[in-house]
Length: 317
Ligand SMILES: [Zn+2]
Ligand SMILES: [Zn+2]
Ligand SMILES: [Zn+2]
Figure 1 (cartoon, rainbow, N blue to C red):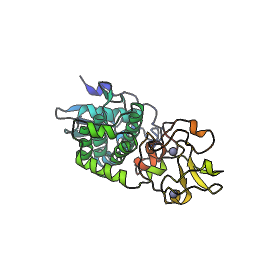
Figure 2: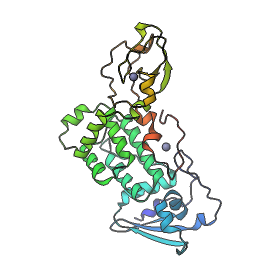
Figure 3: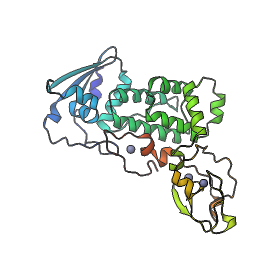
Figure 4: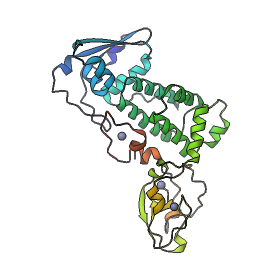
């Protein structure tokens, strides 16, 4: 079967979702006609893609396909060590701006597919795709209440670069979701470097632990309504300015918020008691956690060197 037949013959409208630079396809008639031939996998599968899509999304392809000495109308690139299945997801993203289908296996999220796609996105310099993978992984972890498996952590630590933001996301998923039992009882071995980094994250203050909250000024009116700063444990005095979160009813002193660091914590709200809230009536509400991959996703996990920054909205809410 010719895989390239799956690629649409006509271009869909330019991708305008957040995180990817929009570009005009009308400015240059060559945009419609210039294509690049790619041979993917050990048994080469041919893909014929619009050159402008490749060059607008990737400095790698810009360097490879636009240069004074290169023939601009017919190009061919061989990438024998990239899997066709993973590359198809890349192509889907190039043409639609999204990843289809979201990878599942036996009803569970196939995080390893997303990791393998991230490896390819890194290698081919698709920054927008890397950000999209981060978004999908974060949403998937919440919607299915799952995290990566031990073998996924080995892919993450053995094949993905140390500074990749996706490492930070995975560590935060483990640090802020309730994963203690899973870590303790899983029969397979977690990657040692992953366990070390997770341990450090849980012990050391980080900015995303505070950034994830919806911070608002909060003034306890009376002693019975007050509580301790979640970081330094100082009592927040009535009628003095403090900071609270509408989402989880934690509170902080102004000084700790200014310093901007807090410890990673678990989303089950351990240590909080029924009826304990920021104010009258609020304590009745069920504990809701604030998650860094909601409150500070763009700031912490996205890269925007190539692509435009996302509007700082609470994504996915
Ligand atoms: Zn909160
Ligand atoms: Zn404090
Ligand atoms: Zn962003």
